[in-house]
Length: 167
Image (cartoon, rainbow, N blue to C red; front, side, top):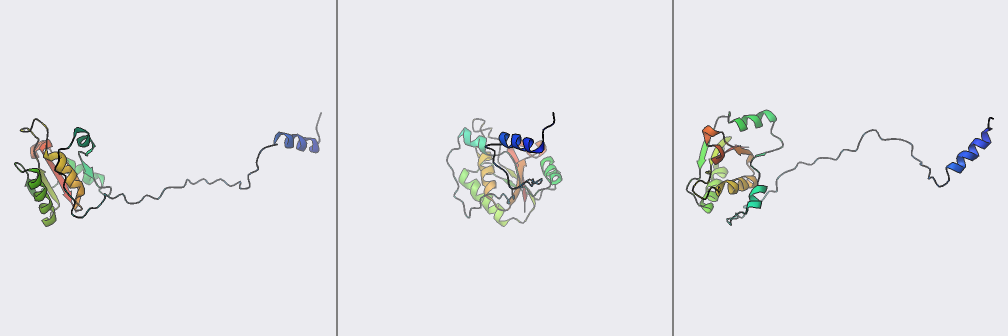
């Protein structure tokens, strides 16, 4: 009943016909990790402001808040809570889109502050659609000096204002 070694090898060889032999029998137990490059926002020098009307789809694509990947979670939480001391306030009420863009860029170019509030309004007088809020958030994303922004707390203006954290 026992088969000899040569019969076992021939049976095995018959079973393995068409199978390609692997020459490397080592298994890499460590996964190859992709090197993560710093994901920076595209930097534009003196960007052209788009003053055309923003469609609803474009407004949905503009983020309500932004935090740079280097900001610690505790600092992010403090910014969202509004518990950081506010150094200055920029009020854009009553400004046209062009005036608001000029004021915002001038404010951030001259500012050496850390935390500011930008008041852009809720859009109560413009058919309940905020005009400046999505534009301000879009312009904030183009500023190199801005590390984070998010909606303000109710006592600081709620959705009509944004906390902005600068470098």
